Image (cartoon, rainbow, N blue to C red; front, top):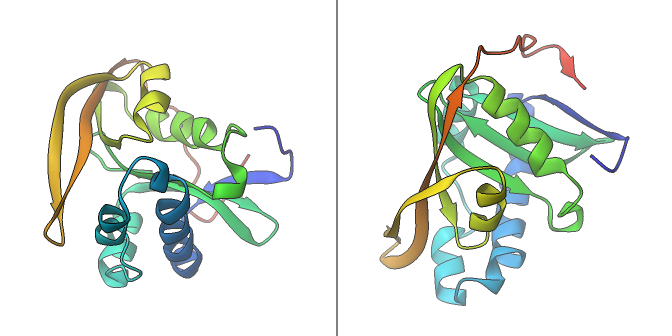
Length: 170
């Protein structure tokens, strides 16, 4: 990462409010170049199911990037190798944060495949990381269709140690 003040650490439930806002803001600014206003609103209407997101983020290996007290990025992967979410604050795009988060998430998978449903916006990022498109698909959000890509990356290595959720990660 370009900014030495940014640290990576495990998700905590008190991060959820900032994550919710970061998700909304990122979709409405960064992804707006690739999707229509109607698609953006269907994707990120302003409210998430906070109980479901918290449960999911706690069950998954979830990493947040923090600068001071501000969360500037987050991502998570489940035990099957499904990389569920990866969002970086609009002001911190292109600084290596997504790469650092992905490196940590991918390191949790010993072997097999990592699967991601990448947006039009995220597809080039994942292709640079060695992911291959399995198929283009249309997903429905609130009655609106959005294009994304099922992508996968084959992994063949032992997993790395990850600290407990209460430990900081650098």
